[in-house]
Image (cartoon, rainbow, N blue to C red; front, side, top):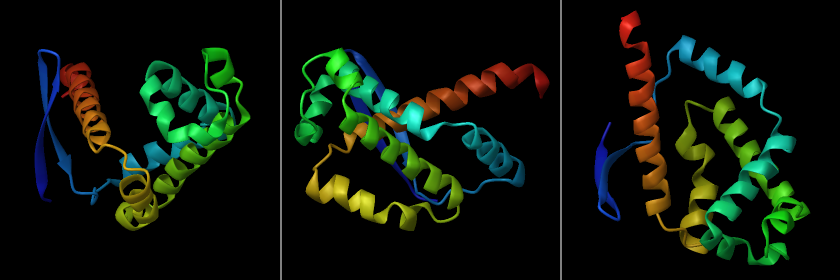
Length: 148
């Protein structure tokens, strides 16, 4: 698995993260845990909430959704039917990832092209996500330390 090294600077904090290839190997137990957890997610209810929070907390991301109408305030964003519908669509794509854990690259090929070539989403956004994943893994390992 080839890894690419990236440095992200946030003020004086520098985060170095490695983005792994999309080929991830899941054990049977990991697969079962992911499927079980995902089955509890109410995509319709949570999707709009998640996207709405993104747009409120990171208002610069609103530029990708200029056809969504009124995004002028938190209440406008959270009540916007287009935000809710697109949030559902985003989480539905994560559901597809759960169904196709062995073929994520092909599963997300069209979406990757859309984000890169048409929307020109800054790849730094994905690198920040990778850094948070790295932290989450480290916290999980630290919490489980006494069990090893």
